[in-house]
Length: 319
Image (cartoon, rainbow, N blue to C red; front, side, top):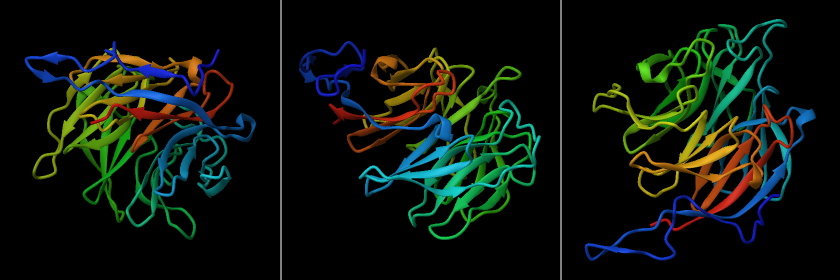
């Protein structure tokens, strides 16, 4: 049975009822999730399987509908509309690891322009696409047909893209141009036929990446000259880690583990615990976004085949 949205309090570790004292100093409690509820049930038959999301200042949510090749906007008053559709590859095109075309990560630039990743199985379509506020989508950086561009983040005028097939992070000028491999650290890779580097965020001068196959969360420093430092495994044993976001509590993250139907809190020291499960409405969670004290989780129902949705919660206990 789904937990009550008004009484649910999911502590993200064995949480003390109050602050404890150690050496005369108070220890800050881990954050907790309250008011867990379904923001919107989506239509599986209509291809509404959200892979990633970004949240606007007005509270609207842009969702990439993976296999439908669409980007849809959910307004605060509940209206869901299609804002962009990416072109289909030729019939019969085989996309690596997936089989069919797939829209993945999405990010907002300060001017309101959105960028998405697109794995289409062809050199002519695979890459990073710009979705202007007005006008048709346009590819701004090409990636090889063998790539699966997935996670996406914007940092200092450049887009960073995780590649789930080739085990790499690409870097692209935000204005468009040639994509270059920024990191091909072994920790980004996967076993043959498996997804490797997946969700990607930039935090405190480093690119963070979730590895789906290895169940790890990685940190790769951005050097003063912009080059990639060595990859460091922050946490392992996470299960199939898809996407994540930072809670605002140091380096703590909320990580979606997709087939496992869980969201885990990963602390800066690498320890982790489950904070959401299928009992809370998860149905193959694919992405997490934290905006202030609000948490959003997309559920694509890739394996459950039931109830794709957008889940919401409130984050409490942050500094």
